Image (cartoon, rainbow, N blue to C red; front, top):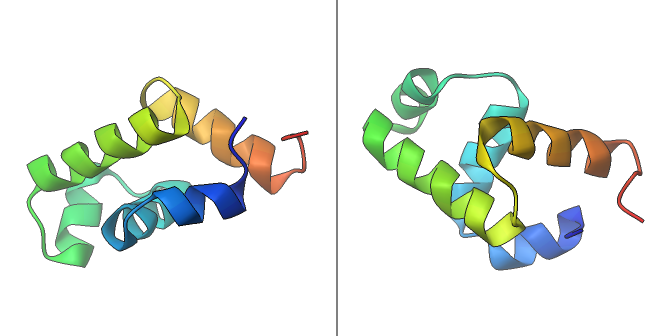
Amino acid sequence: MINYEEALRILSVAEVKVLDLVEQGFTSVEIAKKLGNSPRTVQTHKNNICRKLRVEGRLGLIKWLWKVRNGKNK
């Protein structure tokens, strides 16, 4: 499993911002408003994040975040 430090290295700055907002529980529409992007752009970032972190969908991303934040990435 990719750890958080490695994720920061492989994700773009925009993807890291989206990842942080996903972790805080914001929807794509809310993230788009906060970042001044369209919801489609946010969805593209989320798809790229999932591909790079090798997880499937929002649920997979949330599980990955939980694991790395709780030290379960060993």
